[in-house]
Image (cartoon, rainbow, N blue to C red; front, top):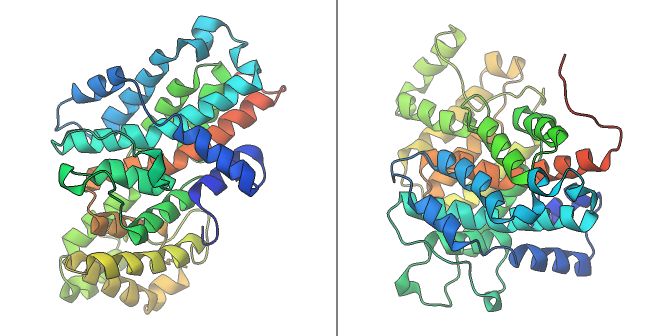
Amino acid sequence: AEKASFLEVSFLLQFGQLPSDHQLERFTDNITAKSVVHDGLISIISAFPRTAHPMGIMISAMAALGTFHPEANPALRGAQVYKDEATRIAQVYRVMGSMPTIAAAVYRHCAGLPINHPPPSRLDLTYAESFMYMLNKLPVHGEEYRPNQKLARALDVLLTLHADHELNCSTATMRQLASSGVDVYSAISGSMGALYGPSHGGANEAVLKMLDRIGSKARIPAFLQSVKDKKAKLMGFGHRVYRNYDPRATLIRQIAHDVFDVMGKADPLIEVATALEQAALADEYFVSRKLYPNVDFYSGLIYKAIGFPAEFFTVLFALGRVSGWLAHWLEYLNDSEQKIARPR
């Protein structure tokens, strides 16, 4: 995440090695070429109530995307359709290219704003910059509008850090669905459904709700005591996999401060979060239990500082994680010994 872009890491996940400059250029071009989605899909997104949860729209839109490409649907073209490597890779390009466009369209629709097209190729924007262009471009910006590079870099790092992470709930869902031979769009939609659950994809939103309940730095000691008394939960600290400091949190902490430098620290929750982190790390109760800040503690603050509403956080999680889901989908299809999943 420090030295490579999200698309470089996506190539690594899907093809097993970091790309050469030429491979990265082709990979990027192929994804960018699939960023324009059918007008019918935009109409489907626009038909949802603006008050709908963004993930509900995302799940529906991804499932609908497959209906515009029946040539890649095993239910219509036969179970062997994904035996062809070119067909498999074409779906990777389409999903990766379409996800930012769909996510930005959902964001704009829920905000009551007209939906933007992908940026013109002459701007030569990165994956994250293109996404932010579609999110934020207004008519007053003109055709040469470019998002803030520091914010785009922060988003790129967050996408990379969320790209893949062990065999979690949504990734296991992807592999289970892949084993049935269903089309990749339905499988991605199902994985997003798993991620939508608050026990999986809602951790960074839960951190913000916790900080809201704390309210001020003066109330932190009482809150930490309530955690010790088992009356409250300390969200964003500790991890099921990492028994010491979450290595992702070290990088994301610096990214958070870079974003705060750009956007300012006007939000009082940022001060509460900083003070809470310092208090917890100075308390032997939490240190002895190896309860250190994890990636979710900072990511929600970054998203909030950039201007994303809390209900959009899981969409951003999915935008990064789709790369890992696709890698697992390819791995499953490439393994001739894998059969339909039947958990025991």
